[in-house]
Image 1: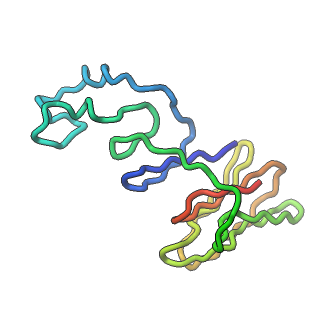
Image 2: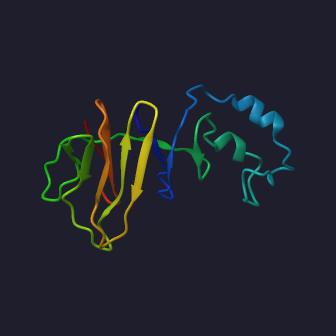
Image 3: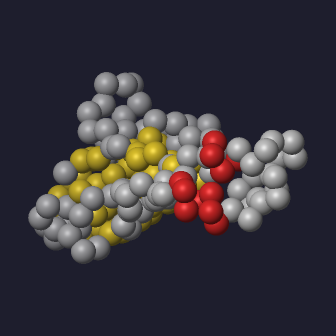
Length: 157
């Protein structure tokens, strides 16, 4: 199982996607369904365009935010920076200690560690000042992800 996150490029919202759609939305249907009177449709707050709001919008299937499709967050797996982001997995019998050697300052910290198994996931969220570490059951093939508030998603297997 893979962790799939999407991020809004406008407001930086982040969502986990269980199943995503990859088909293209039919813009002609959108225009037919638009009930605006010259402009005031549910997709636009403007007062002075001539219903170009529906034509100018980038409507697609899948997860959207701020009227635009959200972008996939692709995990990194190698660290080149002084701050470490890739999670460490220490196996001790039937458990695994997952941790990240990273600063935990107010403006730069690990937001979460997510451990993925075949049919299960364990999420642990952190605040600045806390230690980004969690002990979980060890299972062959598990993946550990860390999410840095500045540098995104990182993965270790």
